[in-house]
Image (tube, rainbow over all chains, first blue to last red; front, side):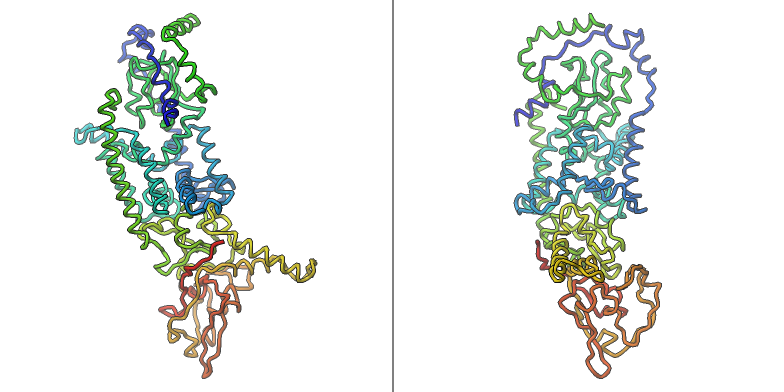
Length: 343
Length: 272
Protein backbone atom coordinates (compact mmCIF):
# COMPACT_ATOMS: atom_id res chain seq x y z
CA UNK A 1 0.00 0.00 0.00
CA UNK A 2 2.68 2.47 0.96
CA UNK A 3 4.49 1.69 -2.29
CA UNK A 4 1.35 2.57 -4.21
CA UNK A 5 0.98 5.78 -2.27
CA UNK A 6 4.63 6.67 -2.91
CA UNK A 7 4.13 5.86 -6.55
CA UNK A 8 1.11 8.11 -6.95
CA UNK A 9 2.54 11.02 -4.96
CA UNK A 10 6.09 10.74 -6.26
CA UNK A 11 6.07 14.08 -8.06
CA UNK A 12 4.49 15.89 -5.17
CA UNK A 13 7.20 14.76 -2.79
CA UNK A 14 10.06 16.19 -4.79
CA UNK A 15 11.63 19.47 -3.89
CA UNK A 16 9.60 22.23 -5.57
CA UNK A 17 11.21 24.28 -8.29
CA UNK A 18 11.70 27.92 -7.37
CA UNK A 19 8.67 30.03 -8.29
CA UNK A 20 9.07 32.13 -11.39
CA UNK A 21 9.37 35.84 -10.70
CA UNK A 22 6.96 38.28 -12.28
CA UNK A 23 9.12 39.11 -15.28
CA UNK A 24 9.24 35.43 -16.24
CA UNK A 25 5.47 34.93 -16.31
CA UNK A 26 4.10 34.34 -19.81
CA UNK A 27 2.04 37.53 -19.97
CA UNK A 28 4.96 39.69 -18.80
CA UNK A 29 7.14 38.16 -21.53
CA UNK A 30 4.53 39.26 -24.05
CA UNK A 31 4.40 42.73 -22.51
CA UNK A 32 0.82 42.39 -21.24
CA UNK A 33 -0.64 42.88 -17.81
CA UNK A 34 -2.43 39.84 -16.38
CA UNK A 35 -5.81 41.41 -17.08
CA UNK A 36 -5.01 42.14 -20.73
CA UNK A 37 -3.70 38.59 -21.14
CA UNK A 38 -6.74 37.14 -19.43
CA UNK A 39 -9.18 39.16 -21.53
CA UNK A 40 -7.41 38.33 -24.78
CA UNK A 41 -8.18 34.63 -24.28
CA UNK A 42 -11.32 33.46 -26.01
CA UNK A 43 -12.69 30.28 -24.48
CA UNK A 44 -13.98 28.31 -27.45
CA UNK A 45 -15.04 25.39 -25.19
CA UNK A 46 -13.41 23.13 -27.74
CA UNK A 47 -12.95 20.10 -25.51
CA UNK A 48 -16.17 20.58 -23.60
CA UNK A 49 -18.19 20.67 -26.82
CA UNK A 50 -16.42 17.63 -28.22
CA UNK A 51 -16.95 15.79 -24.97
CA UNK A 52 -20.65 16.61 -24.71
CA UNK A 53 -21.15 15.63 -28.32
CA UNK A 54 -19.41 12.31 -27.73
CA UNK A 55 -21.28 11.65 -24.47
CA UNK A 56 -24.64 12.32 -26.07
CA UNK A 57 -23.66 10.30 -29.13
CA UNK A 58 -22.64 7.23 -27.15
CA UNK A 59 -25.74 7.28 -24.94
CA UNK A 60 -27.94 7.87 -27.94
CA UNK A 61 -26.25 4.92 -29.63
CA UNK A 62 -27.34 2.74 -26.72
CA UNK A 63 -30.90 4.03 -27.03
CA UNK A 64 -31.26 3.67 -30.79
CA UNK A 65 -29.51 0.30 -30.82
CA UNK A 66 -32.41 -1.03 -28.77
CA UNK A 67 -35.20 1.14 -30.17
CA UNK A 68 -34.35 0.43 -33.81
CA UNK A 69 -32.96 -3.03 -33.18
CA UNK A 70 -29.51 -2.20 -34.52
CA UNK A 71 -26.76 -4.50 -33.35
CA UNK A 72 -24.23 -1.73 -32.73
CA UNK A 73 -24.10 -1.01 -29.02
CA UNK A 74 -26.49 -3.25 -27.13
CA UNK A 75 -27.08 -3.53 -23.40
CA UNK A 76 -26.54 -0.69 -20.96
CA UNK A 77 -23.61 0.85 -19.12
CA UNK A 78 -23.65 -2.06 -16.66
CA UNK A 79 -22.76 -4.44 -19.42
CA UNK A 80 -22.93 -4.11 -23.17
CA UNK A 81 -21.89 -5.52 -26.48
CA UNK A 82 -20.19 -3.29 -29.01
CA UNK A 83 -20.48 -4.91 -32.46
CA UNK A 84 -20.12 -8.34 -30.86
CA UNK A 85 -17.45 -7.46 -28.28
CA UNK A 86 -18.67 -7.64 -24.71
CA UNK A 87 -17.90 -4.76 -22.31
CA UNK A 88 -18.48 -5.10 -18.56
CA UNK A 89 -18.80 -2.42 -15.94
CA UNK A 90 -15.65 -2.93 -13.83
CA UNK A 91 -17.16 -2.24 -10.42
CA UNK A 92 -20.19 -4.43 -11.02
CA UNK A 93 -17.79 -7.11 -12.17
CA UNK A 94 -15.61 -6.58 -9.11
CA UNK A 95 -18.65 -7.07 -6.85
CA UNK A 96 -19.64 -10.16 -8.77
CA UNK A 97 -16.12 -11.56 -8.52
CA UNK A 98 -15.92 -10.93 -4.80
CA UNK A 99 -19.27 -12.66 -4.21
CA UNK A 100 -18.21 -15.40 -6.60
CA UNK A 101 -15.04 -15.96 -4.61
CA UNK A 102 -17.24 -16.76 -1.65
CA UNK A 103 -19.86 -18.89 -3.36
CA UNK A 104 -17.72 -20.41 -6.10
CA UNK A 105 -19.74 -18.66 -8.80
CA UNK A 106 -16.54 -17.43 -10.49
CA UNK A 107 -16.31 -20.80 -12.27
CA UNK A 108 -19.76 -20.27 -13.81
CA UNK A 109 -18.94 -16.91 -15.43
CA UNK A 110 -18.73 -17.01 -19.20
CA UNK A 111 -15.73 -16.27 -21.38
CA UNK A 112 -17.62 -13.24 -22.63
CA UNK A 113 -17.66 -11.86 -19.10
CA UNK A 114 -13.90 -12.14 -18.77
CA UNK A 115 -13.35 -10.66 -22.21
CA UNK A 116 -15.65 -7.77 -21.35
CA UNK A 117 -13.97 -7.16 -18.02
CA UNK A 118 -10.44 -7.05 -19.39
CA UNK A 119 -11.32 -5.22 -22.59
CA UNK A 120 -12.93 -2.39 -20.65
CA UNK A 121 -10.00 -2.12 -18.23
CA UNK A 122 -7.48 -2.10 -21.08
CA UNK A 123 -9.55 0.36 -23.06
CA UNK A 124 -9.78 2.85 -20.20
CA UNK A 125 -6.17 2.25 -19.24
CA UNK A 126 -5.22 3.43 -22.73
CA UNK A 127 -7.62 6.36 -22.62
CA UNK A 128 -6.83 7.58 -19.14
CA UNK A 129 -9.00 5.78 -16.59
CA UNK A 130 -11.71 8.16 -15.48
CA UNK A 131 -12.16 9.41 -19.02
CA UNK A 132 -15.26 7.21 -18.70
CA UNK A 133 -16.69 9.70 -16.20
CA UNK A 134 -16.62 12.79 -18.33
CA UNK A 135 -16.85 11.27 -21.80
CA UNK A 136 -19.46 8.54 -21.28
CA UNK A 137 -21.21 8.69 -17.89
CA UNK A 138 -24.68 10.25 -18.25
CA UNK A 139 -24.79 11.15 -14.57
CA UNK A 140 -21.66 13.28 -14.99
CA UNK A 141 -23.47 15.23 -17.68
CA UNK A 142 -26.46 16.00 -15.46
CA UNK A 143 -24.16 16.74 -12.53
CA UNK A 144 -22.30 19.23 -14.71
CA UNK A 145 -25.60 20.97 -15.42
CA UNK A 146 -26.36 20.85 -11.71
CA UNK A 147 -23.03 22.53 -11.06
CA UNK A 148 -24.19 25.48 -13.17
CA UNK A 149 -27.38 25.80 -11.15
CA UNK A 150 -25.28 25.64 -8.02
CA UNK A 151 -22.98 28.37 -9.35
CA UNK A 152 -26.04 30.60 -9.68
CA UNK A 153 -27.03 30.09 -6.05
CA UNK A 154 -23.45 30.63 -4.94
CA UNK A 155 -23.39 33.92 -6.78
CA UNK A 156 -26.57 34.90 -4.95
CA UNK A 157 -24.80 33.90 -1.73
CA UNK A 158 -27.51 31.37 -0.83
CA UNK A 159 -25.01 28.55 -0.37
CA UNK A 160 -21.31 28.24 0.26
CA UNK A 161 -18.74 25.84 -1.09
CA UNK A 162 -16.84 23.60 1.23
CA UNK A 163 -14.44 20.83 0.32
CA UNK A 164 -14.06 17.53 2.11
CA UNK A 165 -11.37 14.91 2.14
CA UNK A 166 -11.48 13.20 -1.22
CA UNK A 167 -9.92 9.99 0.15
CA UNK A 168 -13.31 9.08 1.62
CA UNK A 169 -14.18 7.54 -1.74
CA UNK A 170 -11.73 4.72 -1.03
CA UNK A 171 -13.71 3.99 2.13
CA UNK A 172 -16.84 3.75 -0.01
CA UNK A 173 -15.05 1.60 -2.57
CA UNK A 174 -13.92 -0.93 0.03
CA UNK A 175 -17.24 -0.59 1.86
CA UNK A 176 -19.41 -1.40 -1.14
CA UNK A 177 -17.24 -4.41 -1.99
CA UNK A 178 -17.49 -5.55 1.61
CA UNK A 179 -21.27 -5.12 1.54
CA UNK A 180 -21.43 -7.21 -1.63
CA UNK A 181 -19.34 -9.89 0.07
CA UNK A 182 -21.45 -9.92 3.22
CA UNK A 183 -24.94 -9.68 1.72
CA UNK A 184 -24.27 -11.65 -1.49
CA UNK A 185 -26.07 -8.94 -3.44
CA UNK A 186 -24.84 -6.33 -5.90
CA UNK A 187 -25.87 -3.73 -3.33
CA UNK A 188 -24.24 -0.81 -5.09
CA UNK A 189 -26.11 -1.40 -8.34
CA UNK A 190 -29.38 -0.49 -6.60
CA UNK A 191 -27.97 2.96 -5.85
CA UNK A 192 -25.82 3.42 -8.91
CA UNK A 193 -27.01 6.54 -10.77
CA UNK A 194 -24.94 5.58 -13.81
CA UNK A 195 -26.75 2.28 -14.26
CA UNK A 196 -30.11 3.73 -13.29
CA UNK A 197 -29.85 6.56 -15.80
CA UNK A 198 -28.53 4.31 -18.52
CA UNK A 199 -31.29 1.74 -18.05
CA UNK A 200 -33.94 4.46 -17.74
CA UNK A 201 -32.91 5.94 -21.07
CA UNK A 202 -32.79 2.62 -22.86
CA UNK A 203 -35.60 0.58 -21.29
CA UNK A 204 -37.87 3.37 -20.06
CA UNK A 205 -37.94 5.35 -16.82
CA UNK A 206 -38.78 3.88 -13.42
CA UNK A 207 -39.03 4.62 -9.73
CA UNK A 208 -35.28 4.43 -9.33
CA UNK A 209 -34.96 7.81 -11.05
CA UNK A 210 -36.21 9.40 -7.81
CA UNK A 211 -32.87 8.52 -6.27
CA UNK A 212 -30.96 10.14 -9.13
CA UNK A 213 -33.02 13.32 -8.83
CA UNK A 214 -32.45 13.35 -5.06
CA UNK A 215 -28.71 12.99 -5.61
CA UNK A 216 -28.67 15.81 -8.13
CA UNK A 217 -30.59 18.10 -5.78
CA UNK A 218 -28.13 17.28 -3.03
CA UNK A 219 -25.27 18.16 -5.36
CA UNK A 220 -26.88 21.52 -6.13
CA UNK A 221 -27.85 22.55 -2.60
CA UNK A 222 -25.63 20.36 -0.44
CA UNK A 223 -22.12 19.27 -1.26
CA UNK A 224 -20.72 20.21 -4.65
CA UNK A 225 -20.30 17.17 -6.94
CA UNK A 226 -20.93 14.96 -3.91
CA UNK A 227 -21.34 11.66 -5.74
CA UNK A 228 -18.60 11.97 -8.36
CA UNK A 229 -16.01 13.37 -5.99
CA UNK A 230 -16.55 11.55 -2.74
CA UNK A 231 -18.55 8.38 -3.38
CA UNK A 232 -18.67 6.81 -6.84
CA UNK A 233 -16.75 3.50 -6.70
CA UNK A 234 -16.94 3.12 -10.48
CA UNK A 235 -14.82 6.26 -10.80
CA UNK A 236 -12.40 4.89 -8.21
CA UNK A 237 -12.06 1.62 -10.13
CA UNK A 238 -11.26 3.55 -13.30
CA UNK A 239 -8.85 5.80 -11.41
CA UNK A 240 -6.72 2.75 -10.58
CA UNK A 241 -6.01 2.10 -14.24
CA UNK A 242 -5.79 5.86 -14.81
CA UNK A 243 -2.81 6.06 -12.47
CA UNK A 244 -0.70 4.07 -14.91
CA UNK A 245 -2.36 5.35 -18.07
CA UNK A 246 -0.14 6.61 -20.89
CA UNK A 247 -2.28 9.71 -21.42
CA UNK A 248 -3.02 12.60 -19.15
CA UNK A 249 -3.40 16.34 -19.03
CA UNK A 250 0.09 17.72 -19.58
CA UNK A 251 1.21 20.81 -17.72
CA UNK A 252 4.10 22.99 -18.91
CA UNK A 253 5.38 25.26 -16.19
CA UNK A 254 6.96 27.86 -18.49
CA UNK A 255 3.56 28.72 -20.00
CA UNK A 256 1.72 28.99 -16.67
CA UNK A 257 0.68 32.36 -15.30
CA UNK A 258 -0.21 31.07 -11.79
CA UNK A 259 -3.86 32.13 -12.05
CA UNK A 260 -5.23 28.71 -10.80
CA UNK A 261 -8.47 29.27 -12.74
CA UNK A 262 -8.11 25.70 -13.98
CA UNK A 263 -8.51 24.41 -10.43
CA UNK A 264 -11.79 26.32 -10.08
CA UNK A 265 -13.41 24.52 -13.02
CA UNK A 266 -11.95 21.11 -12.18
CA UNK A 267 -13.96 18.24 -10.68
CA UNK A 268 -10.84 16.97 -8.92
CA UNK A 269 -8.70 20.09 -8.28
CA UNK A 270 -6.17 18.16 -6.21
CA UNK A 271 -4.96 16.59 -9.46
CA UNK A 272 -3.86 20.08 -10.57
CA UNK A 273 -1.80 20.68 -7.42
CA UNK A 274 1.18 21.79 -9.51
CA UNK A 275 -0.45 24.95 -10.91
CA UNK A 276 -0.09 26.86 -7.66
CA UNK A 277 2.79 29.30 -7.45
CA UNK A 278 5.89 27.49 -6.30
CA UNK A 279 4.24 24.07 -6.15
CA UNK A 280 5.54 22.49 -9.34
CA UNK A 281 8.50 20.16 -8.86
CA UNK A 282 9.20 19.58 -12.54
CA UNK A 283 8.98 21.56 -15.75
CA UNK A 284 6.36 19.16 -17.08
CA UNK A 285 3.68 17.46 -14.99
CA UNK A 286 0.85 15.08 -15.76
CA UNK A 287 -2.46 14.74 -13.95
CA UNK A 288 -3.01 11.44 -12.15
CA UNK A 289 -5.68 8.78 -11.93
CA UNK A 290 -8.48 10.94 -10.57
CA UNK A 291 -8.34 13.24 -13.59
CA UNK A 292 -11.40 12.65 -15.78
CA UNK A 293 -9.74 14.12 -18.87
CA UNK A 294 -12.73 16.41 -19.30
CA UNK A 295 -10.64 19.18 -20.80
CA UNK A 296 -12.31 22.05 -18.91
CA UNK A 297 -8.89 23.15 -17.60
CA UNK A 298 -7.42 23.00 -21.11
CA UNK A 299 -10.26 25.16 -22.43
CA UNK A 300 -9.84 27.80 -19.76
CA UNK A 301 -6.03 28.04 -19.70
CA UNK A 302 -4.93 31.47 -20.94
CA UNK A 303 -1.35 30.47 -21.71
CA UNK A 304 -2.07 27.04 -23.18
CA UNK A 305 0.03 25.54 -20.43
CA UNK A 306 -2.37 22.60 -20.24
CA UNK A 307 -2.97 20.13 -23.05
CA UNK A 308 -3.62 16.43 -23.60
CA UNK A 309 -0.32 14.61 -23.78
CA UNK A 310 1.40 11.25 -23.67
CA UNK A 311 3.56 10.21 -20.75
CA UNK A 312 6.96 8.63 -21.38
CA UNK A 313 6.90 4.84 -20.75
CA UNK A 314 9.63 5.15 -18.11
CA UNK A 315 7.48 7.68 -16.27
CA UNK A 316 4.39 5.42 -16.32
CA UNK A 317 6.42 2.60 -14.84
CA UNK A 318 7.72 4.86 -12.09
CA UNK A 319 11.33 4.74 -13.32
CA UNK A 320 11.92 8.18 -11.87
CA UNK A 321 11.34 7.08 -8.29
CA UNK A 322 14.84 5.62 -8.07
CA UNK A 323 16.31 8.57 -9.92
CA UNK A 324 14.63 10.91 -7.47
CA UNK A 325 16.42 9.38 -4.50
CA UNK A 326 19.83 9.82 -6.12
CA UNK A 327 19.19 13.33 -7.31
CA UNK A 328 20.94 16.04 -5.37
CA UNK A 329 18.69 19.03 -4.75
CA UNK A 330 21.31 21.36 -6.24
CA UNK A 331 21.14 19.58 -9.57
CA UNK A 332 17.64 20.78 -10.26
CA UNK A 333 18.51 24.39 -11.11
CA UNK A 334 21.40 23.11 -13.29
CA UNK A 335 18.96 21.16 -15.38
CA UNK A 336 16.84 24.22 -15.71
CA UNK A 337 19.82 26.24 -16.90
CA UNK A 338 20.55 23.69 -19.57
CA UNK A 339 17.01 23.99 -20.81
CA UNK A 340 17.21 27.75 -20.86
CA UNK A 341 20.40 27.55 -22.89
CA UNK A 342 18.67 25.38 -25.46
CA UNK A 343 15.79 27.81 -25.69
CA UNK B 1 -8.11 21.22 0.84
CA UNK B 2 -6.50 21.17 4.22
CA UNK B 3 -3.59 19.12 2.93
CA UNK B 4 -0.99 21.53 4.30
CA UNK B 5 -1.99 20.85 7.87
CA UNK B 6 -1.68 17.10 8.40
CA UNK B 7 -3.48 17.09 11.74
CA UNK B 8 -6.50 18.90 10.39
CA UNK B 9 -6.45 16.77 7.28
CA UNK B 10 -6.47 13.58 9.32
CA UNK B 11 -9.33 14.81 11.44
CA UNK B 12 -11.25 15.76 8.33
CA UNK B 13 -10.61 12.37 6.80
CA UNK B 14 -11.75 10.55 9.93
CA UNK B 15 -14.89 12.66 10.08
CA UNK B 16 -15.73 11.98 6.44
CA UNK B 17 -14.92 8.29 6.86
CA UNK B 18 -17.21 8.06 9.87
CA UNK B 19 -20.13 9.39 7.82
CA UNK B 20 -19.18 7.02 5.02
CA UNK B 21 -19.16 4.02 7.36
CA UNK B 22 -22.49 5.05 8.88
CA UNK B 23 -24.14 5.43 5.47
CA UNK B 24 -22.68 2.12 4.32
CA UNK B 25 -24.05 0.48 7.45
CA UNK B 26 -27.49 1.91 6.70
CA UNK B 27 -27.33 0.66 3.11
CA UNK B 28 -26.11 -2.75 4.29
CA UNK B 29 -28.87 -3.12 6.88
CA UNK B 30 -31.42 -2.10 4.27
CA UNK B 31 -30.03 -4.77 1.95
CA UNK B 32 -30.41 -7.41 4.66
CA UNK B 33 -33.90 -6.16 5.51
CA UNK B 34 -35.12 -6.23 1.91
CA UNK B 35 -33.42 -9.48 0.96
CA UNK B 36 -36.47 -11.63 1.71
CA UNK B 37 -38.88 -9.22 0.07
CA UNK B 38 -36.86 -8.87 -3.09
CA UNK B 39 -37.89 -11.71 -5.33
CA UNK B 40 -40.06 -10.65 -8.26
CA UNK B 41 -41.38 -14.22 -8.36
CA UNK B 42 -43.60 -13.33 -5.41
CA UNK B 43 -45.60 -11.07 -7.70
CA UNK B 44 -46.54 -13.98 -9.96
CA UNK B 45 -44.10 -13.33 -12.78
CA UNK B 46 -41.41 -15.72 -13.96
CA UNK B 47 -37.70 -15.53 -14.72
CA UNK B 48 -36.40 -16.15 -18.25
CA UNK B 49 -35.70 -19.78 -19.19
CA UNK B 50 -32.55 -21.21 -17.63
CA UNK B 51 -32.44 -18.70 -14.77
CA UNK B 52 -30.58 -19.79 -11.70
CA UNK B 53 -32.06 -20.09 -8.22
CA UNK B 54 -33.29 -16.75 -6.96
CA UNK B 55 -30.57 -16.31 -4.37
CA UNK B 56 -27.84 -16.97 -6.90
CA UNK B 57 -29.67 -15.14 -9.67
CA UNK B 58 -29.83 -11.86 -7.77
CA UNK B 59 -26.07 -11.50 -7.57
CA UNK B 60 -25.23 -13.31 -10.79
CA UNK B 61 -27.33 -10.90 -12.85
CA UNK B 62 -25.30 -7.82 -13.74
CA UNK B 63 -28.43 -5.88 -14.76
CA UNK B 64 -27.29 -5.04 -18.26
CA UNK B 65 -30.50 -5.90 -20.08
CA UNK B 66 -28.87 -7.73 -22.99
CA UNK B 67 -31.54 -10.43 -22.62
CA UNK B 68 -34.24 -7.76 -22.95
CA UNK B 69 -32.69 -6.57 -26.19
CA UNK B 70 -32.28 -9.95 -27.83
CA UNK B 71 -35.77 -11.32 -27.11
CA UNK B 72 -37.64 -11.20 -30.44
CA UNK B 73 -41.08 -11.09 -28.81
CA UNK B 74 -40.08 -8.53 -26.13
CA UNK B 75 -41.19 -10.85 -23.33
CA UNK B 76 -38.43 -9.83 -20.92
CA UNK B 77 -38.75 -6.70 -18.79
CA UNK B 78 -36.47 -5.29 -16.09
CA UNK B 79 -37.74 -5.01 -12.50
CA UNK B 80 -38.00 -1.59 -10.90
CA UNK B 81 -37.19 -0.30 -7.41
CA UNK B 82 -40.46 -1.65 -6.00
CA UNK B 83 -38.82 -5.07 -6.15
CA UNK B 84 -35.96 -3.87 -3.92
CA UNK B 85 -32.82 -5.89 -4.60
CA UNK B 86 -34.36 -7.40 -7.70
CA UNK B 87 -33.97 -3.96 -9.28
CA UNK B 88 -32.74 -4.25 -12.85
CA UNK B 89 -33.18 -8.01 -13.08
CA UNK B 90 -35.16 -9.54 -15.94
CA UNK B 91 -38.59 -11.09 -15.57
CA UNK B 92 -41.42 -12.21 -17.82
CA UNK B 93 -44.99 -11.18 -17.15
CA UNK B 94 -46.86 -13.88 -19.02
CA UNK B 95 -50.15 -11.94 -18.99
CA UNK B 96 -48.50 -9.32 -21.18
CA UNK B 97 -46.15 -11.41 -23.26
CA UNK B 98 -45.16 -15.00 -22.66
CA UNK B 99 -42.02 -16.69 -23.91
CA UNK B 100 -43.16 -18.63 -26.97
CA UNK B 101 -39.70 -20.08 -27.71
CA UNK B 102 -39.90 -18.58 -31.17
CA UNK B 103 -36.24 -17.56 -31.05
CA UNK B 104 -35.50 -21.31 -31.14
CA UNK B 105 -32.05 -21.07 -29.58
CA UNK B 106 -32.96 -19.63 -26.14
CA UNK B 107 -31.11 -16.48 -27.09
CA UNK B 108 -31.55 -14.68 -23.77
CA UNK B 109 -29.51 -17.44 -22.14
CA UNK B 110 -26.96 -17.45 -24.91
CA UNK B 111 -26.39 -13.70 -24.65
CA UNK B 112 -26.12 -13.51 -20.85
CA UNK B 113 -22.48 -12.65 -20.03
CA UNK B 114 -22.64 -13.69 -16.39
CA UNK B 115 -24.57 -16.93 -16.96
CA UNK B 116 -27.31 -15.80 -14.58
CA UNK B 117 -29.50 -17.19 -17.33
CA UNK B 118 -27.53 -20.33 -17.83
CA UNK B 119 -27.06 -21.41 -21.42
CA UNK B 120 -25.06 -24.49 -20.46
CA UNK B 121 -28.27 -26.34 -19.52
CA UNK B 122 -29.67 -25.86 -23.02
CA UNK B 123 -26.45 -26.52 -24.85
CA UNK B 124 -25.97 -29.71 -22.91
CA UNK B 125 -29.54 -30.87 -23.61
CA UNK B 126 -29.24 -30.04 -27.31
CA UNK B 127 -25.92 -31.83 -27.71
CA UNK B 128 -27.24 -34.86 -25.88
CA UNK B 129 -30.31 -35.05 -28.12
CA UNK B 130 -28.13 -34.99 -31.24
CA UNK B 131 -25.86 -37.61 -29.77
CA UNK B 132 -28.78 -39.91 -29.00
CA UNK B 133 -30.26 -39.34 -32.44
CA UNK B 134 -27.05 -40.28 -34.23
CA UNK B 135 -26.69 -43.32 -31.99
CA UNK B 136 -30.23 -44.37 -32.86
CA UNK B 137 -29.47 -44.30 -36.57
CA UNK B 138 -25.98 -45.76 -36.19
CA UNK B 139 -24.20 -42.50 -37.01
CA UNK B 140 -26.07 -41.88 -40.27
CA UNK B 141 -29.16 -39.70 -40.25
CA UNK B 142 -31.87 -40.47 -42.81
CA UNK B 143 -32.67 -37.45 -45.02
CA UNK B 144 -36.19 -37.00 -43.59
CA UNK B 145 -34.90 -36.35 -40.04
CA UNK B 146 -33.93 -32.76 -39.24
CA UNK B 147 -31.43 -32.88 -36.36
CA UNK B 148 -31.86 -29.14 -35.78
CA UNK B 149 -35.51 -29.59 -34.86
CA UNK B 150 -34.74 -32.45 -32.51
CA UNK B 151 -32.14 -30.26 -30.86
CA UNK B 152 -34.53 -27.33 -30.47
CA UNK B 153 -37.22 -29.46 -28.86
CA UNK B 154 -34.70 -30.94 -26.42
CA UNK B 155 -33.51 -27.44 -25.54
CA UNK B 156 -37.02 -26.19 -24.90
CA UNK B 157 -37.68 -29.00 -22.50
CA UNK B 158 -34.36 -28.68 -20.70
CA UNK B 159 -35.37 -26.19 -18.07
CA UNK B 160 -38.45 -25.10 -16.16
CA UNK B 161 -39.41 -21.46 -15.64
CA UNK B 162 -42.48 -22.57 -13.77
CA UNK B 163 -45.35 -24.96 -14.13
CA UNK B 164 -48.95 -24.44 -15.26
CA UNK B 165 -51.69 -25.01 -12.69
CA UNK B 166 -55.48 -24.93 -12.83
CA UNK B 167 -56.39 -23.58 -9.40
CA UNK B 168 -60.14 -23.77 -9.94
CA UNK B 169 -61.59 -25.96 -12.74
CA UNK B 170 -64.86 -24.03 -12.48
CA UNK B 171 -63.13 -21.09 -14.16
CA UNK B 172 -62.30 -23.17 -17.23
CA UNK B 173 -64.63 -22.85 -20.24
CA UNK B 174 -63.96 -26.42 -21.38
CA UNK B 175 -64.90 -27.74 -17.95
CA UNK B 176 -68.42 -26.48 -18.58
CA UNK B 177 -68.33 -27.74 -22.14
CA UNK B 178 -68.23 -24.16 -23.50
CA UNK B 179 -66.56 -23.13 -26.69
CA UNK B 180 -64.78 -19.88 -27.44
CA UNK B 181 -65.33 -17.45 -30.28
CA UNK B 182 -63.46 -14.22 -30.62
CA UNK B 183 -59.98 -12.82 -30.63
CA UNK B 184 -57.16 -15.16 -29.77
CA UNK B 185 -56.03 -12.74 -27.07
CA UNK B 186 -56.83 -9.32 -25.64
CA UNK B 187 -53.28 -8.03 -25.36
CA UNK B 188 -51.16 -6.89 -28.30
CA UNK B 189 -48.76 -9.78 -27.83
CA UNK B 190 -46.73 -11.82 -30.28
CA UNK B 191 -47.03 -15.55 -30.74
CA UNK B 192 -45.67 -18.06 -33.17
CA UNK B 193 -48.28 -20.83 -33.36
CA UNK B 194 -46.88 -24.37 -33.32
CA UNK B 195 -45.92 -25.57 -36.78
CA UNK B 196 -45.86 -22.05 -38.20
CA UNK B 197 -42.85 -19.95 -39.15
CA UNK B 198 -44.62 -16.60 -38.84
CA UNK B 199 -45.41 -14.67 -35.69
CA UNK B 200 -48.89 -13.26 -35.25
CA UNK B 201 -50.37 -10.60 -32.98
CA UNK B 202 -52.90 -12.43 -30.84
CA UNK B 203 -55.39 -9.55 -30.82
CA UNK B 204 -55.51 -9.58 -34.62
CA UNK B 205 -56.55 -13.20 -35.04
CA UNK B 206 -60.09 -14.51 -34.73
CA UNK B 207 -60.66 -18.04 -33.49
CA UNK B 208 -63.74 -20.20 -33.19
CA UNK B 209 -63.56 -23.31 -31.04
CA UNK B 210 -66.39 -25.68 -30.27
CA UNK B 211 -64.70 -26.58 -27.02
CA UNK B 212 -62.22 -23.96 -25.76
CA UNK B 213 -58.78 -25.53 -26.04
CA UNK B 214 -56.54 -22.53 -26.75
CA UNK B 215 -54.08 -23.53 -24.03
CA UNK B 216 -53.66 -26.96 -25.57
CA UNK B 217 -53.66 -25.97 -29.23
CA UNK B 218 -51.08 -23.20 -28.90
CA UNK B 219 -48.70 -24.79 -26.39
CA UNK B 220 -45.17 -24.49 -27.84
CA UNK B 221 -44.25 -27.81 -26.25
CA UNK B 222 -47.21 -29.74 -27.58
CA UNK B 223 -48.63 -32.91 -26.07
CA UNK B 224 -45.54 -33.45 -23.90
CA UNK B 225 -46.82 -30.64 -21.74
CA UNK B 226 -50.59 -30.39 -21.95
CA UNK B 227 -53.52 -32.43 -23.27
CA UNK B 228 -57.26 -31.95 -23.26
CA UNK B 229 -58.89 -34.71 -21.25
CA UNK B 230 -62.54 -35.66 -21.58
CA UNK B 231 -64.29 -36.00 -18.26
CA UNK B 232 -67.59 -37.26 -19.70
CA UNK B 233 -70.94 -35.42 -19.89
CA UNK B 234 -69.41 -33.07 -22.47
CA UNK B 235 -66.93 -31.82 -19.90
CA UNK B 236 -63.27 -31.34 -20.67
CA UNK B 237 -60.24 -30.19 -18.69
CA UNK B 238 -56.64 -29.66 -19.76
CA UNK B 239 -54.22 -32.01 -18.08
CA UNK B 240 -50.76 -30.65 -17.36
CA UNK B 241 -47.96 -33.15 -17.84
CA UNK B 242 -44.32 -33.41 -16.84
CA UNK B 243 -43.17 -31.76 -20.05
CA UNK B 244 -44.62 -28.37 -19.03
CA UNK B 245 -41.83 -25.80 -18.62
CA UNK B 246 -44.03 -22.90 -17.54
CA UNK B 247 -43.51 -20.66 -20.56
CA UNK B 248 -46.90 -19.07 -19.95
CA UNK B 249 -48.41 -19.10 -23.44
CA UNK B 250 -51.49 -20.88 -22.00
CA UNK B 251 -51.97 -18.17 -19.37
CA UNK B 252 -51.51 -15.43 -21.97
CA UNK B 253 -54.21 -16.95 -24.21
CA UNK B 254 -56.70 -18.10 -21.56
CA UNK B 255 -59.86 -16.06 -22.28
CA UNK B 256 -61.39 -16.22 -18.79
CA UNK B 257 -61.08 -13.58 -16.13
CA UNK B 258 -59.45 -14.44 -13.78
CA UNK B 259 -57.34 -16.83 -15.80
CA UNK B 260 -58.28 -20.49 -15.39
CA UNK B 261 -54.73 -21.62 -16.08
CA UNK B 262 -51.85 -19.86 -14.36
CA UNK B 263 -48.11 -20.32 -14.12
CA UNK B 264 -46.58 -20.99 -10.76
CA UNK B 265 -42.98 -19.76 -10.81
CA UNK B 266 -40.58 -22.63 -10.37
CA UNK B 267 -38.32 -21.91 -7.44
CA UNK B 268 -36.39 -25.13 -7.28
CA UNK B 269 -34.39 -24.54 -10.44
CA UNK B 270 -31.50 -26.93 -10.59
CA UNK B 271 -28.23 -25.26 -11.35
CA UNK B 272 -25.74 -26.86 -13.63
